[in-house]
Every structure is written in C-alpha cells, then in structure tokens.
Amino acid sequence: MALIKINNKKLNFKDNKKILKEIRNSVHPNCVFNKGNGNLFPNLLFILDNDGVIKANFKCKPIFQGYSEQMHGGFISAFMDAAMTNCLFSRGIIAVTVNLSIRFLKPVKIGDSAVVRAWIIKESKRICDLKSEVNQNGLVNARAEGKFMINERVIS
Image (spheres, rainbow, N blue to C red):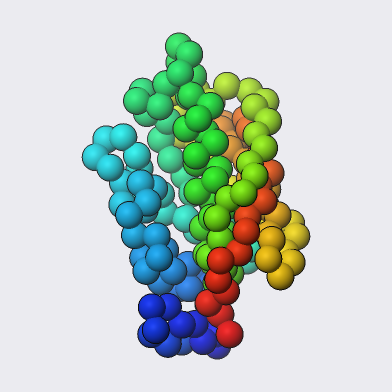
C-alpha cells in the first residue's frame, strides 16, 4: 500500500488509479483537460492499464479543426502533453514539461473518435522521459517524446 502526502494530508492507496485521481484533483484541478470547458475541451478520463500505459478516448470535435476536416496540431500536442502528465501523476510524480517533440504521421480526422496514450520510458532523480501517441481508426496518427522535470514525488 502506498502512502502519499498531498497538501500536508497523508493518504493511503492500494493502487495507482486512486493515486492518479487524488493527485489530479489536488494539484491540477483547474487544468482544461480535468474539468472540461463547455464545448471546447473534454474532461479526459485517463485509464491506467496493467502495463503502466495511460490512455483516454476523445471525440475530435469541429472546434479542434485546423485544415479542413483535420485536427489542429496544437490540440494534438496538448492532448499528448496531458496524457504524459497524467501518466506521471499515476506514479505519484508531479512534474512540468521541459521539452516536447511531436511527429505528425497522418491527419487526425474531425468527427471521429481517437485515443491518446502515454508511458514512461526513463526515470531519474529529477527528469522523466515519456512517449505518447494519438491513434485513430487503428492507426498511429502522431507520436511525441517529452521530458519532464520532477517537482515532487508524493509517494513514500
């Protein structure tokens, strides 16, 4: 059982899914991807699988459009950054993005659903390297690599 301390409150959790929810609600409550923002941003429900990969499904709304029928790259980047941040939250790590590299492979089509996934590839005392991707209709549409500076580890 993990013991975490957030805002001077000690909490016990059996699994990373509860840790993710508590950290997200405690230190990141106003993120546009946490609360949603009317019709613009969805409230992404991140799910952690047994392999440590976090994922969320989302609808590619017309408001996300860049070129005709295609999701804007800035939104795609933001979704992958949010997934990587929440992946770290699930491990009890609070960190900020210091570098984000995106590779756009195929257009993400407006009107269809997509999945954003993220996972840790390397972790040191102060830095975590992660990867993320957006998939639509069984294809990888975009990939990202991110470097995050750790502010705090809340699991002891």
